[in-house]
Image (cartoon, rainbow, N blue to C red):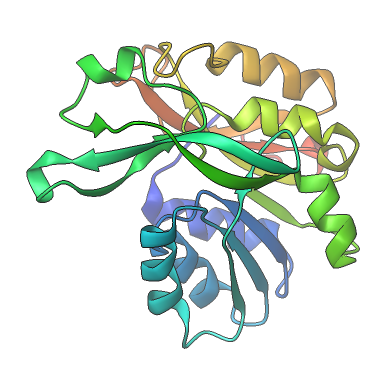
Length: 226
């Protein structure tokens, strides 16, 4: 099993993905990872989802000079229409918006950091499958999910489409950071049940923090890392 961090993750992905990949990023925040993807694959296309107006404005400003980035002011969810969202703020940065906001109410993560949450707001949500169909996108090469505990519901709501994506990079949690969320073992088990294999992760066997990230492949036999 490969151990990854942000430094070697993109080197690994560059070997796995085509030169012009179609990438969907759920939870783009202000675009730090979005920009790195755009620079790594200048001939690729990145659809970056971020629903919160204030954060989306930063994302749009930060990526507007890249013709291969398409910011989408929607949240990936389990339905098409409005949903409640719990915005997060960082008290150490003048209560600026934090990427810890979620479609689930916060729970145990409140004891792990200084991040605070305000009252829920209504945001527009869409299922991945319905959005892809509406946009007439033929294929997705890579799915990047940073949805603060909502990764599994989003994937399950578009199961048939998820099964066609060769690589998925998703955040995973080892505690119930958000109410009712699926944790790491449940996400791993579900993805394995539809043919995926975890090929890399950024956390040790005994995690020392409450979340991490894992890379899953639908075509494990093609990539012999071990």
